[in-house]
Amino acid sequence: MSNPTSPNEASNGFIPRSGRPPWYTSDGSSIRDAFLIGIAGGSASGKTSVSNRIIREMNVPWVVIISMDSFYKNLNQEARERAARNEYNFDHPDAFDFDLLHEKLSKLKQGLIVDIPMYDFTTHSRLTTTQKIYGASVIIFEGIFALYDKKVFEMMDVRIFVDTDDDVRLARRLKRDIASRGRSVQSVLDQYHKYVKPAFDDYIRPTLKNADVIIPRGLENNVAIDLLLKMIKRKLEENVSFKSELAKLHEGKHGLPESVILLEQKPQVVSLMTTIRDKNTNRDEFIFSSDRMCRMVVEKALTLLKFHEKSVITPIGKTYHGFTMADKICGVSIERAGVAMEVSLRQVCKDIKIGKLLIQTDTKTGDPQLPSDISSRKVLLMDVSVATGAAAIMAIRVLLDHFVLEENIIFMCLLAAPLGLHSISYAFPKVKIVVSQVDQVLNDKFYIVPGFGNFANRYFGTCNNNK
Image (tube, rainbow, N blue to C red; front, side):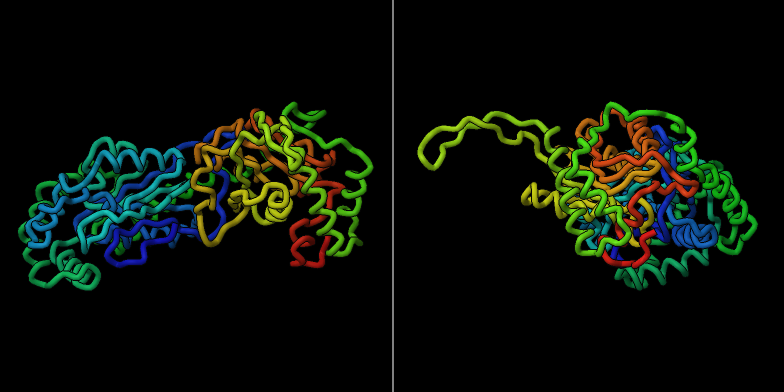
């Protein structure tokens, strides 16, 4: 979800400073709608600056900014020619696709993935590429008509109007359009007096009545901005103890859920797990034993897939009636430890598509890396261990949001605690879980006991500490 690279494109973005908290409850359902802030005002009034100020002072990592500029209508050839002659009114409500805007904001508010259009102001058309925006807790939507359409502004939790002096806005627009949009001074002035100023007086200023907060002078109004910050903070403080909630919900449950397939504890399985658990096992032996164990889990998971009959001709010319896999499959690893299981999956399933999810923290992107056709496949979800089940629940929820059916997900791991297995099964009873061993105890830090230490550090050689 990177911002557009061209200065001529409408700018939206995900503000990623660190990992975001779960946006789903312990039963896998949505916590609540995202908090939607609408910021309106005249052209170059400082709407984007106010948005950035809110984000900077809040220092929250899961905010999405959506620009209304992305929702300009795609112009036909005749309209483009008028735009080139500065005869097209981009500051009229009819220039925007409010139906598409409402659709995208509604889905984003529900926590669903959306593709936001990208508009090029040089060609006056939408680009063929879009921006994927996903899983926001707070959405800031800014644009000149942010408070114009009733079905749009009624979705908002806070409505803001940035009221800036006309002369200041004109000076800013001149600077912006000349530098970033390739316009001449005269063309900007002509457009301002012909379209921008009348549109502000006739359509934009009247939306003041729809605002909860009016910010005169934009960034200079610290009182109004402080008020907004307090409102957002209250929203974000409502969800802080997801793991503790899971622990309390399933504490004391005995046995394993019906959806769990535990490998038969034969000497081979126990021997491999003993080597993996031993703190004195060197890294080469640890990797070798882990890969063998992962392969056994993968092979067991594959027995849960559908197969259909197939006949082949053997090298001696005889017919053999057998089976072949009927399901299209892909793998998804929960980073970082889940990546270790990819080796075994690729050994068993040649050329399989594999995606990745980073659930714990992600300072670079909020965009899951998943196969484009994942909704049509059986998904083998991989992580080496399950303690409370929090990461697995979030990962499964991400897959569901990408339209993967719950019954098409098989979760694979090497080690789990009953608490985590019950949590996953409670939230998603149709998901099958394949695990090699189960440890009964979680300590007060939610570590599996006796466990096998930090698997990722031991497997990838990033730390000598096996605690």
